[in-house]
Image 1 (cartoon, rainbow, N blue to C red):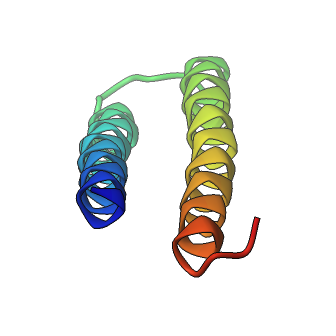
Image 2: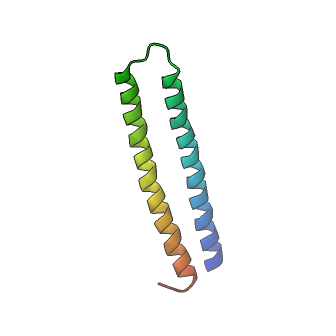
Image 3: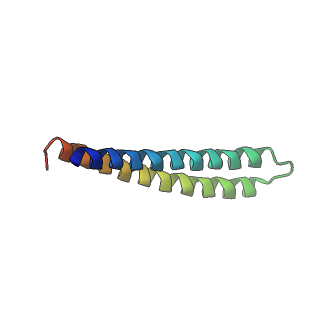
Length: 81
């Protein structure tokens, strides 16, 4: 039962990681589209950059949470509460 719960937890973390990877790719696409847009201004590029920076900051915070979640689960699995 504990092993199944741990497997399900690890699977859910992996699915969240996959979703985050897709978000990162989308943010990369925004930057590429912006720099290839004729006539885009520096101000517009900076606004897009700030938006992407905010999104990546949120992803980093979620990554830290997922790492902590995994570490706690692995400690419990080893019997270390």
